[in-house]
Each structure stands twice: as structure tokens, then as C-alpha cells.
Length: 431
Picture 1 (cartoon, rainbow, N blue to C red):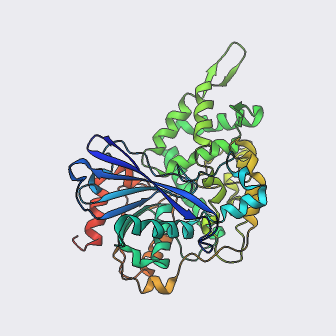
Picture 2: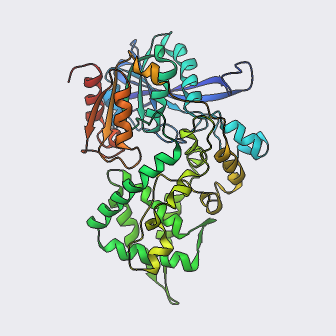
Picture 3: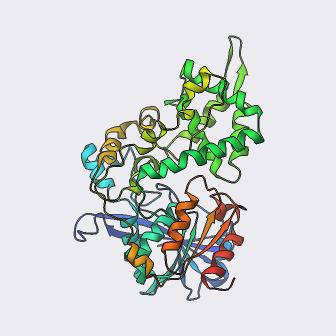
């Protein structure tokens, strides 16, 4: 273990060995990384543990500097483990560079089938006794981390002292088709709100999409397409996302000696925002997190989009309507345009066709839950359906909700200490 300091906090790198397949504990092992954080003034004390599960899937735990955001509040009473879920961050990363070590696409898909919330929870249960001596710990789950927390409540509630969920109450039984059928109208509402705030962006977006359709430029090997441009709508689900999108669009074009062209600044910003180089598992496993039972996910977002023709950029450009952005949807073309995903196209196809996904949630066990649980549910959350979240909240015995429109999906980051304070008071019945 290596320890080091940042302002107000002592950090320790921790590495754990866990089975790739928890049903075969003596088989292949992988490494999972977690960063321990403790307040510098309390480093020598025995403190209860809180494990943080990041959103995604596919993102390592946030790299805090000092005691920023919610971490400072947590460190008042907890020793915190910022866990890089398997395949992310420093936890045996899975990407276009490392996955060929597994073999071909079939072997890669079989390997990645072990990277969902069920395996993440089993990892936590192997790690927990090594840190707590067997005592249960507190879980804070953001977005997909909340999905993992609900799986935790279904599979190993004995490991939990209390559970805090922010924007991450999943449907217990919805197929991926149902998830995206509910998602497109939410996305459309967010786009309408953005255009109402920045009406000048309607023509800018049309001009950009038309230019991309005609010229199909590349930036560092990333093909810039109208569909890729539309995917920038993923920004609209965060508190400052609409403003970020506006600033990205406002300097899209420059005049050159030959013609008006897309600026290098815009092309680089679009490539950076649209690239999955830093989180390829998001693209590979995003629909798989909804897989339960024998029905394949089968590119649900792409298929369901056909039911919402207003999202077709080519149709919008033929008329005079706005080009609608998308977001939180993964499509086959992502694996054609993005060099970080291109070598994994066949692997993604095999995952989309897979029909042996284990069931993730246990409704009977959740209905008998005895673990204190509190969840922040964000009104009209773009990424996680509010109605599904509230149905799940009602299905988990004793769960207390805080439904708010004060924050968007990233409320635990934007609201920081206040959001964590509210959830802790709810879970401890102090509100």
C-alpha cells in the first residue's frame, strides 16, 4: 500500500484480488483498485467505512482533489473507499488495447459478461471484510452505482449498514426496449428546453449537421457524423450541460480563404465529447446492464429510435424543423466512427445478442428489506426514468425518497455536501 497526502486528506492506494467469475473462485483472478480517503485530522482513528460506487457503467471513481464536493462531508464521519469497478480506472482495465489478450470477439464477450453489477457486488463483498473486519459498511451509489446498490440489497444485504442512492433507482424488471421507449420523450423535452433557452442554437445545429452530412470530416481518426453530433445531447442531463453545449456550438464555423469550414476548435471539442476512449465499457455494456433472462438487448436504443422519427437528422434537414440531440443511447454506428471502439465492433454485436443474462434483482427480498435506504430522485432525470425510480422505491421496504428538481442527474456532484447531508438525515430518520 502507498499513502500520500492532499489538502485535508490522507489517501492510500489499495489493490485487491478477486475472481473473474465468482462462481469459480479458484479460477482466473483479476485486480480491483480502490483509493482510501480519510480526513487528515482523523487518520489514526477507527472510523466506519463508506464505499462509493460511481455512475456509468465504465467510469472509474472520480479523482477528487482534497476534500472537494461531497467527499469533504463524508470524511467528517467515514473512512471512504473510492472504488474503481472492475474493468475501469486501475481495476484491470478493459479496452481495445487490453481485450485482445482474451482472444477473439467471442472470448472478449464472454469475459465482459462478468463485468455487470452482480459481479461488482461480489467484489465488494470480498473487499469489505478485509477493510472492516467483517462489519457492514455504508454504500453511496451514483447513477449506475445506485443500480449496483439495489443489486447489493438483493444479493448481500448483510454487508450493508445503510445505503444512499443518487439518481440511480433502476426498474426491477424493464427490458432495455422499455428503458429507451421511455427515454426518448425525456430527451426530447431536454432538447426543447435547451432550444428555448438558446434559440440561436436551432440554426447553428442545423448548419453543423448539414456540414457533417456533406463533408464527413475526421478528427484524430474519429469520423464526425450528424449522428455523432446529435449524441452531444448527453450533456443535457447535467446541471450545466445546456450551457456547455451552447458554448460548444457558438464557435463551430470559421471563414478560411477557400470557404466556411468547421473550426478545429469545434472538431476537437466534438471528438473529445463523443469519444469513448476513456470509458469504452460504457458503450460495450450500457444495454447489458438491463439484460435479465433469455431476451437479448439487441441494440435496443437503435431499434426503438425508429419509433421516434423526429430524431432522424436527415429528415429534419430536408424540412425546416430542429435537429434533435440524443443522449444516453448507444448505437451500432458508435463502433464504426470511434477508433477506441472500432476494433470491438464484433464483441459488441455478440453482447447485444446474448440471451443468458442472470436476473439482477430479487423483488421478494427487496420487499422484506431491513437495511436503511435513502434515495435522491431527480424530477425529469434525463438518464434514469423518474416513474421507474419511484416504482422501485415503493418496492423496497423502508426506502425513503427525496424527489427534487433543484438538481439534475449529477446532483451529488453539483450539490455536494448538501445532497449527502439530506440523504444521511433521511436514512437515519432525522429529517
